[in-house]
Length: 318
Image (cartoon, rainbow, N blue to C red; front, side, top):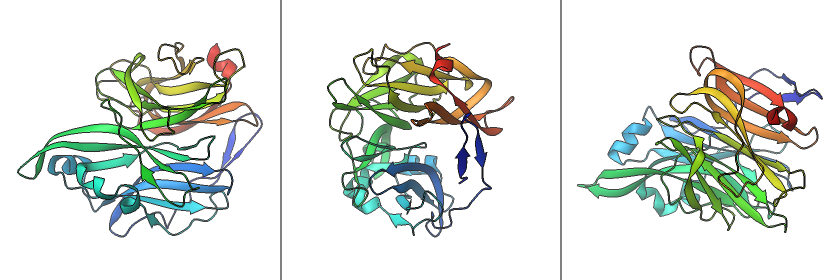
């Protein structure tokens, strides 16, 4: 990790890289970091997966032998020190793990809802059928990992009813103060998958997005909610970040939705990087009313750099 000091102009002064020495299991690779902040205790949870040895995701999907664990470390001093690792797999997933060829969280960030629930976006490669103890039909589905007691215990929600994969989530607050958990998920087939939960992430109702394009093999995307200007039917709007090209990972764009419970409410994207673009993560700073993002980008490949950018809503609207 790096710790950053945010300046008034949106720039950040970054510290040197710090290795999180406790965020690991012996003999495993640590992957897919996904932080979520609990406001009451001011505790930062870093949820991630640990994969055994050199086992690949494709091997697990092909064999149905799950070699992945769900883990967590916490910090009470905003990332200066971290707790020992905690393996959440048996507690959160339990016997359902038998049906999961493998799984992941994020990558990106989790959210704390208005009702206090902590939600970490996740996905599973679910075994729909087996033949001679081997999976013969596996599909990926997004879902949530959540805690209702400030991170003491964790559970998994039900998977989306549409094929989906890596996802991020954001809470939409309507004018009456009701919360709706929005999920935006990677999907092959040319368009993103969008879903809404009316029970804080326990289950979702999903549909294919008519406006958000997806490259052929899909790509992770990022979404964040923020206060609206008070002129619409919701107290919050959504900002979504993703490559905008319909075939390749090119031209990172930011989309605004001023009617976030409407899948046709997305504006045309504002391009913030021309060229190869990949994974990203968005954040909103209420104190400065600015958005910040990390993104994979480059000139020949999206894997050349991880870049940081900061911008205002008015810059996105232009």
